[in-house]
Length: 592
Image (cartoon, rainbow, N blue to C red; front, top):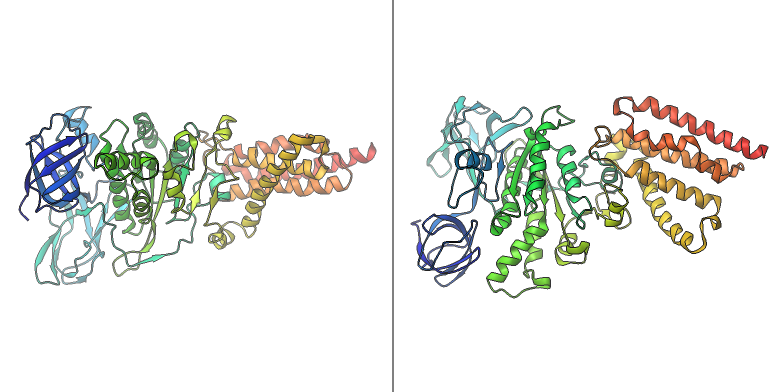
């Protein structure tokens, strides 16, 4: 298609309206003005196109030239994505910084993948073989932990004419394919894919395996499945960013795509400084060896926030198509929705609730629906998963606002952060009374087979005792603690142990920051061993005040700090002390 050229009629912040664009298409990428700023057509009326520009529009004026590229906004997919940091439209920020300094100038364009770096390609197919779309042609060792699979691009099937091994740049031809239409086309290490179109797959499967995070309140009470969706809403200061950093650090996925969408720049700086120094507990390598970062911070052009979410999830889908487990972490979808609201206002569309566009829910759904567990294209039947986790930053912590409510209608896990828990220094501040996971029952079988047959019994018991505690505290406020029976007093003590000794977790501690499932199970079992034996002691006449102050309570509280390598022996000692000290409490009561 020939490039369509138009002229600017109006500039309104990131929105530019151009005439003479009748031959252009919706979502075409355009170059605006003398500096060729990057923009995208988001609305057409006759020969007038409304363009959202992904760069600062100061200096543009009426009559400036607009040129359509005839192609949609796309990302480059190939070796070199991992360890990189991109902006919302996949410009490599480290490369730009090295070439142009710390401030990005307008109109700068740089390829997303390094054109000079050589990659060692190892073919998995030979000349003369028939290959179909999604078939693995060969491998490139991208990082120490990720073996990059070079696949036949979607939509192409045919006979391999040639294929070579050796060192190649991403744009070099590694072979040729005679497609079913009869043409011979070159194959390279790189693919391009439009960000607003989800990548194809053979079949979607129901998620049946948990994404283990090492965070006790998540894994035990509100688990997320691999291929699932979750949201983390919470007011300012409730720990959303730390929760998301923990998920990015410790989740048992092969790859993490972390999207900093409209959040503060210093938060992204923390990620950039921390991740290279942290060790992945599964591989022993640097976390950056499995991380792609998209940084579109609050001081960057607002329109690019809208694109950053799609850029991130398209990169994630590409690695999912290789058969990997991928997690997309978006921080935060509220800032993304604010970018939608700003563009909608400038387009003079009819506003919905709180000024957000009427299509807010459908756009959110389009993002989260791209998550899932799928059978990938190709003949080998590989299965990939993509889990989507979005932070929501409701104004004033009011979760009844439109973005949170629209998100809750779509996702299946709700980790509701509570400012009152945060003020009490209970982190992660996930409120156990209003959070939920719709994957719990589906994951029951996996936990029974891989952790313990009574995992769901213990975790269900924890949720129940926390709910009972909430009801008992209402009674205590009215009539005082002494009015409760010894059994109810014990319930309050055990609930406090569940909260403080199990759920409360220090993210920056080497031992407590990550807890494997077997240790989580034993820790929780320890709490309920105490409850069961304390009930027997009360029935045998022991005083509840004596039981509540036993030294072993302190030992249970410190059990989570026991190094993971040594915990089994230590937990056996604590269990023996529980029995011994409760027996002594019964003896003291009988002697009295």
